[in-house]
Amino acid sequence: MPYTTKDFETVAKPDWCPGCGNFGIQAAMKQALANLNIDPHMIALVAGIGCSSKMPHWVDTYGLHTLHGRAIPPAQGIKLANPKLTVIVNTGDGDGYGIGVGHLVHAMRRNIDMTYMVHDNMVYGLTKGQTAPTSPKGFKTPSTPFGSIEEPLNPVALALTMGATFVARGYAGDVQHLTMLIEEAVKHKGFALIDTYQPCVTFNKIQTYAYFVQHVYKLDSDPAHDKSNFEMAMKKAWETEKLPIGIFYQVSRPTYEEQEPGMASGIPAAELPIDDIDITKTMEKYM
Ligand code: SF4
Image 1: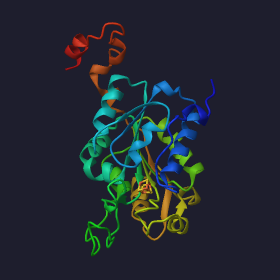
Image 2 (image 1 turned 45 degrees about the vertical axis):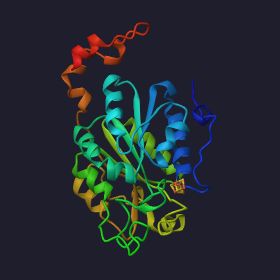
Image 3 (image 1 turned 90 degrees about the horizontal axis):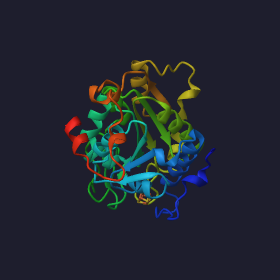
Image 4 (image 1 turned 180 degrees about the horizontal axis):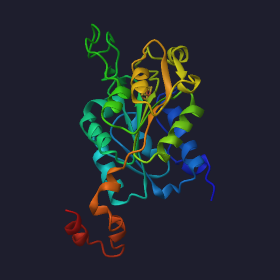
């Protein structure tokens, strides 16, 4: 049946600060899932810890709220147990690029088929506004009262370097454009990163909605941009005066699941008995 955004609404309502960019990302997520018309029970939303990571509570699909920086291992396990599921991770820049960056780089080089959606507000919001991996140099917070002395992590350049096959950047203030990006990322076979600029209205007074309106531009507006060209994507990744949003890079490469010999004989989850939960045989086969 055709789904609408209402089918992905939950009874519980988000407790994000009024005006938080997460609302735009949530709206885009629900719209994209409705447009893709995927059965909600065939979607697994996985999250780490942070304001962004509450998303599985407020989009009505299967969901798993895991540990800080640890969303990828269970997300990979879910995908390998049942490759038919659409697996989407929601995480923040602190969770995904700080605590969880070790898991991230290996998932990208493996090319596991999942969408990795980072709500990038350049600050730790849930823990009251400390400097995060993508905070700009000089950023003043309670953890860096004299200004951060570190260069920020570049998520797009990192993803390109580590072999992600779909690399995009979105903006929470442009829900229609972000919806399109999520749809394309979910349809892509392989690891898809969407680094999403997400204004934190409470703790980031520099990268505000007004800042992004002034700085972002769409990659589509550059007819010369070729998303299959690695060097071109990398050059765009390092633009800092104006900030491109859209699909930087997209190529096709076999996924981890397609290459894993253990997956050739079927879907592991399908072997689980429904009435009598005894996974001994399945464990023996795959361990
Ligand atoms: Fe959003 Fe920032 Fe509030 Fe967290 S602290 S809910 S990121 S505005």
